[in-house]
Image (cartoon, rainbow, N blue to C red; front, side, top):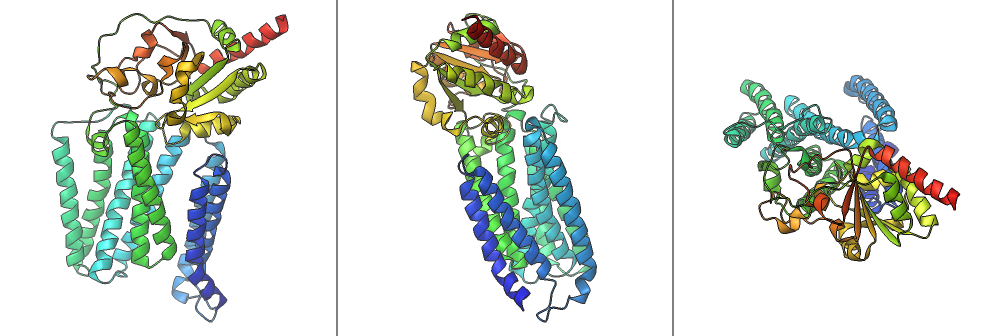
Length: 473
């Protein structure tokens, strides 16, 4: 009897922990405790799902004892693998891991739907329709997230496009919807099984075809979108199972993911439809205004000395910093500047890196204080009064073409105003273009100098240069 009461209350308690944890994740200062709180909610939900196996008198339901063993084995295998991989994943691979976990959530929702359909548990047109819709969205999220992972991990290096692709994708999606309608109408008949298989094949295929043509620059938005898909699928399957924890958690994740997706699209001054159906992000893209001037190179030591004697420095981290795993060395350099009385701030663009919040996580790993990290809207006004802007591995998010060149594919995208600083140093491995495929006009400005090299090596030289300067003094 106690177990039954616990099951009844656990859904609401777990949901409350999910919501409170998500609220705590809104700030870097409380994000860790938020993750722990949400994790506690998941533990409550898992325990409750096992207690469902018990009858009111405490005996185990005999027809579920076999599944109990499988469930425990799956929990141990999945939890053990996730713990092992999570502890070892590199920061550069964090977006890939997030994409995979998004997909796993959608796949779990689709698997629940498959069990409901094959086991004859769904009853009534409404529950059948909800189950089918959840299965569709979950399947798309599963395979779409796998393609996003492959793109982020450079397993798929270029978008895959062909003539009439949108028409083909639309026909496959429409056919999948019609087959799903057939499953609802013929549920329980022999034809239902065949249609269900075709439905899942179509849904999984559409997730692949939908994601393949999207360029790498849009993967942060895509990851966020599939996160919303997963939440929606989980919420729908929770409704089908009459599970309040799944319903509330799914709705929270779905709404948060949707809001984040729209905010990220807005940060690039583009619609979600443009993200999904345009060729933006293809590194073979061309266009842009004629470039005037030439790039000027600078030595790492000279740049370091200039920053050491500056009054203010704003640092703009990008994905190149993560690739070089140079965040620790960067913070070592920052601490030297702070000790010398230099005002140092970090400027974060909403779509910097390969996933939402990537740069914030990167800096938090290095121990950078939260109070010197600022979002784009909060710091852009400071650049005109800043002595030095240091750009590390960022490209499109500091390209002035977004403000001035109407022919540029990034025109209208809000950027960090690094070019308005008195002096700009850009740490970059070479003269390559960003994900948008257009030339960065900042690199040709009179106040900009390029410091070529791997970020780890360049920052090591900078640290050593200011240390040698202090020793000589």
